[in-house]
Length: 481
Ligand code: UD1
Ligand code: MG
Image (spheres, rainbow, N blue to C red):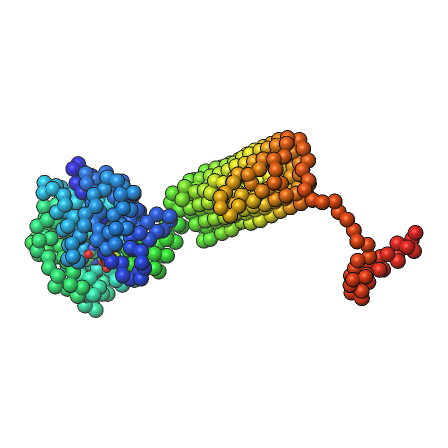
C-alpha cells in the first residue's frame, strides 16, 4: 500500500434489499444506465486498491456474474449465514491473506453517487490523522433510516446507533453514517472479532466497530461530506428514483458545461455511458442510453429514445425510437420512425414518417420517406423508396434479403417479396408486387390494366348520395357538351 492508495476496498453487496420489494437483487437495480453496484465498483476501482473485494450472498447467482462482467479483477467473496454488515466485512477481510495491512476502505454497494475523489479524501484524512477508523458522515434534513453519529461533548465520534436501536433523543441527531469507512486493517480484524448480535435486527453491525474503537481510546475520525448526495443509500424504490434524478441532473450539467444544449433538463435523460459532442442539441423528452454517441450539431428530439445508436454530425432525429442503429452525417430521421437493430443510414439519407427499419443498410442520399417497413434490406445510394412500401422479408419460416440498387425510384405502395433484387437505376410502378428480380434500368409493373364498369353506382346503389353525385356530374357534362 502507498499513501492514499488503500490496501483493499471491500464493497458490501450481500444484503437482502427487502425494502425494494423486487425479484431483482437491490444492487442490480440501475440508475443512469449502470447498476448501483456498477457505480460503486467504478468509484472503488478509481482508487487503484491492491485488492478489490465484493461480498455477496443474497441472490449471489445473479450478483457474482455481474461483478465478473463489470470488473473481472475483483474478488467475489461469499458471506455465510450470519447476517449484518459487520459479518459481511469480516468475511471479506478473512478472504484476504492475513498480511494485508494499512488502510482498508469499506463501502456499501447501495450508495451509488459516491465518487473516487470523495473516497480518496476520506483515506487522506484517515491517514493524516492516523485514525483507527474514519467514517464519512452527512448532515441530512431527514435522517430517517440511517445510523446516527453520536459525538461526545468535545465533538469526537463515540459511536453509531442504528435507527431501530436509537432512543428518541438519538433519532433527533441529523448527522448520519454513510456506510463508507476507512479502517486500519489490524484494528478492523481485531474489532470485528468482538462484535455481537445483541441489537434490534439481531445482526452483526459493522457500525459497532466505531464504539469499540472509542472505548479502547483509539482515534476515531468523522469526515462530514460536503455533498450529501454522495452518502445517500438506496433502500426503497422512491430513493432509487430520487438518486436517479440527481445523477441525471449532474450528468446534464456536465454536458452543458461541455457545450451541449439541453433545452429541458427535467425531461431529458442521459446514461452515464453516453457520449455527446459540443453543439449537440437535446430537445425535450429525449432519453439516450447505452453506448449511444451523438456527433456535433446533431439535433435530437423532441420525444426520442435512442439505445446504442450512433448519430452523425448535423443529423436531425425527431420523435424516434432507435436501438442498435447508425445514423450518418446530415441525415433526417422521423418524425415517428422506429429504427431497430442493424439499421445503417448513410450520409444525407432519410428515414421519414411512420417508417420501421430493421437490419437495413440504406446508402448515402437514399430515402425512405413515408409509411414503410424495411427489413433485411440494402438500398443503394441515391435511391428513393415510394410511400407505403413493405419489404416482405418473412415467409413464415425464414427471413430473406432484398436488395435495391443505386438510383432506383420505386413506386408507392409496393411490396418486395424477398428474396428479390432490383437492379441499379430501375423503377417500379405504383402498387407493384415485386416477386422476381428487376433488371437494371427496367420499369417493373405488376398491376393489371384498369377497367371501368360504367354507371355501376347509379344502377346498383340508386338513391345514395354517391349515385346522386354521379348523376349530377353526368348531366352537367351532357349540358356542357
Ligand atoms: C447501513 C448502516 C447505517 C447507514 C446506512 C447507510 C449498518 C448496521 N447500518 O444501514 O448505519 O446509515 O447503511 O446507507 O451497517 N449488506 C451485506 N450483508 C448483510 C447486510 C447488508 O453485505 O448481511 C450490504 C447490503 O448489500 C448493502 C449494505 O451492506 O449494500 C448496507 O446494508 P443495508 O441493509 O442497506 O443497511 P442500512 O439499513 O441501509
Ligand atoms: Mg442501505
